[in-house]
Amino acid sequence: MDYVPVYEGEADEPPAANSIKISTEKVQKLGVRTEAAELRALDKQVRAAGRIEIDERRSFAISPKFEGYVERLHVNVTGQPVAKGQPLFEVYSPELVSAQREYTIAAQGVDALKDAGSEARSGMQQLAESSLLRLRNWDISEEQIRALAKSGASKRTLTFRSPVSGVVTEKKALQGMRFMPGDTLYQVADLSSVWVVADVFEQDIAQVRTGAVAKVRINAYPDKVFEGRVTYVYPTLNAETRTVPVRVELANPGQLLKPAMFAQVEVPVGGKGQVVTVPASAVIDSGTRQIVLIAHGEGRFEPRDVKLGGHSESHIEVMDGVKAGEKVVVAANFLIDAESNLKAAVGGFGHSGHGGAPKSGKDDEKPAAAPQAAGHRAEGTVDSVDAKDGTVSLNHGPVASLKWPAMTMEFKVANPSLLQALKPGVKVDVEFVERQPGEWVITSATPAGKAATSTPAANPHAGH
Figure 1 (tube, helix red, strand yellow):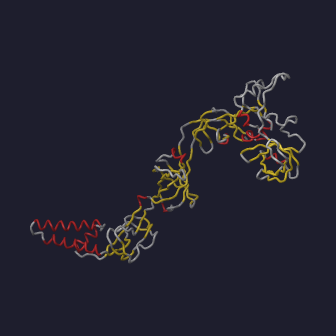
Figure 2 (cartoon, helix red, strand yellow):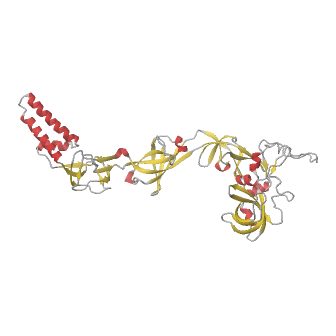
Figure 3 (cartoon, one colour):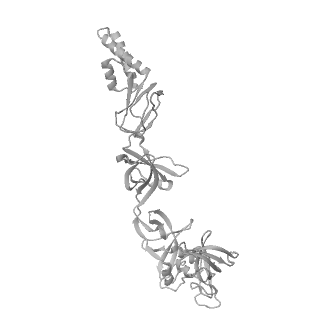
C-alpha cells in the first residue's frame, strides 16, 4: 500500500508537515473508523483478587487459667454452631477445688466472727475477698460464685461456656485429656460478619479510599453480588506480588461466605472531573512513546505524540497532544502504521523532506531523499493457509533487504481480503513488514510476475 506525503498546494488548507495520505477506496477497504476526542469523566473500577477471612474482632479462644483435666465434652465436633452461654465442656482441677474450699471457709469465718473484734473480723474479710478474687481471675462466673457462697459446698467440676454465638472453628479438647494453664481448648468465631482481604496492585492503591463501597463476587454464587465497605488499607506492601492488602467488611447473612473462599473485588474510584479522552483502541503504544492518528478528512492522517493520563475500561485521558473535537482513528490504525511505514514518517518529524518535494519537475532540481522503506519483498509459493488464524505458510526465495536465504516460514496477513490471492500452490509476489520482533505481516500479495495493485509498477516502494 502506497502512502503519499501531502505536499504544499495540494489542498486549500495546508496540512501538517508529517501527515500521510491514503486513497478513499483504500480507507474503506481497511475499515478505518474514527471518533471525536471528547470531554468526559473517567469512571474506573479497581479490580483485585481476595479471600474471605474471619473478623479478628469476632474470634474467641477458650483457654483455662489453671491446670486440670477435661471431664466431659458438651460440644465435641469442629464446625458445630453454638449459642452464647452454651456449655462447651466441664473440667476437674484440684487447684479449683482447693480455691473453692478456701473461699467457702473464709466466707463461713466472716459470718462466725461478725461479733468478734474488728481486727479479727477484718483479717477474715480480707481472706474471703482474696479467695473470691482468685476465683474471678480464673473466669469463674458470678452465677457459680453465688451458688458456691449460698450452698457452701464446692463443686468437683467447672463448666466452661461459649462467650459468643458462632461456630466452633477449632477444638483441641479431648475427653480425659490433661491441660495446662493457657492451653487453647476451643476457638469460637462469630461469622455473621466477615472480612475480605483483597490484594490491590501497587499502581492502583493510591486511588482506593476507606469508606468506598466495594462489590464482592464469589465463584460459588455466580448470581449474587455482595456489598461491603473498605475499612482499612494496610501499611505494608508484598514485595513478591507488588500488592497491598485492602480490608473490606461485609455482612454474612445465612453464613454463605466461608473463610478461605476466593473472591473478586471491585472498588469504584472517582475521576478528576471532565478531561479530554479518546477510546483506548486509538492509542498506538510502542513502549517508549504513545501516538494517535488524527484524521483530517479526504484520506489524510497525522500521527501525533500524546501524553496520557488516567484510564477507564474503554477510554484514556489525553493530557497533551489532542484537543476535544479532533477526530482520531479508532479502528485499523495499526494497519495504517504497519503498511504506510509510519515509523519512518514519525522518525522524520521536523525534517524538510516533505516540504522540499519538487513542484516544477525541472531536471536541475533535486528532490529530497525519501525515507527508507520499512517493507520487504519476496517471491515464493504458498504451502498452506489458515483462514481462521489469518496465517500463511510461504516457501519464499532469498530476501535481499533482510539478507535472508530461501526458506519456508509463517506469515500473518494484515487484512483478511489478502487471503483471496494466497491459495495453496500459487506463486506470489508479497510485500511484508515486521509488526513486532519475530512477527512478520504480509501487507500485499499478487500472482508472481504481476505488479501489486497497491504499488505502482515503475517503483514498488514509491510513497514509502
